[in-house]
Image (cartoon, rainbow, N blue to C red; front, top):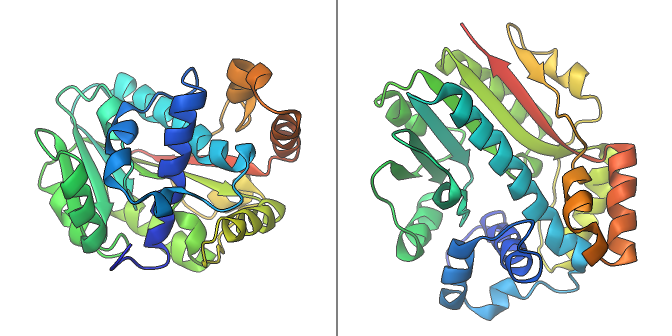
Amino acid sequence: MKGLSVISETLFIPLAGRIYVSKQHPKLLNDTKALEIESQIDKEYLSLKHADEYSLLASAVRNSNFYRIIQAYLNEKQHDVAIINLGSGLDTTCYRMNLGSNNWFDVDLENVIEMRRRMLSENGNIHFLAASVFEDEWIKIVKEFHPRNVLVVAMGFFYYFEKAKIVDFIDKIFSSFANVDVAFDTVSKAGLFVSNKIVSQMGKKVIMHFYVNDTDKFANSYANHTVCIPEERFYTRTLNQIGSELKLKTRLFMKISNWLNMVKIVHLKREN
């Protein structure tokens, strides 16, 4: 789409995945907002070249997993919460959440936020912030709301940057908020190879860099924090919910991914 960077254009991959799953497997994910805005987007951007069932499902599974993490955080903290969705693109998770009086912030570059505002509503406690994720501007804005509890999520975002940049960024988040969780998805080195191949097949000219082989080793580079270990592997719930509806090849890929822990969500918590 005109004006979007190569990385920003990847926002159509998870949107296409959520639309596909909402139509084909609504038991896993029923994203009515994604379906509403489908007609506003040129079909060229949602027609992912050579995307198979596994590729279309992957981002929707990620979204479903993060939905549970975010809702569990809201249920635990209940009040004075800020959820920050980094590199939000056209993500519509906030419209499915039970936010109560808490605030949600979608952060992305200015041209992406302009597109969000044309298609999605910003009102009440849902805020769109036009800012570079790696700069301090959005942090200052969030602090003006004086949240006691902060959850920062990066869904499919960190992949496109070098590890050193991500490490420094997470350290800045920990330094900026007293009580903060950071949750993001990542892959192993083998998973990164597979992910780059899939994105290339979809016609996107972008290279992903960030991966984490050893979650504990990565997390231990940060002081004064705990690591929340997921109770299940990335595709376990999906296989239990809709495994019988999927092609044999898709089920096999998901089981191998789980077995090798190729795709994972890292959840770091820091409390003072």
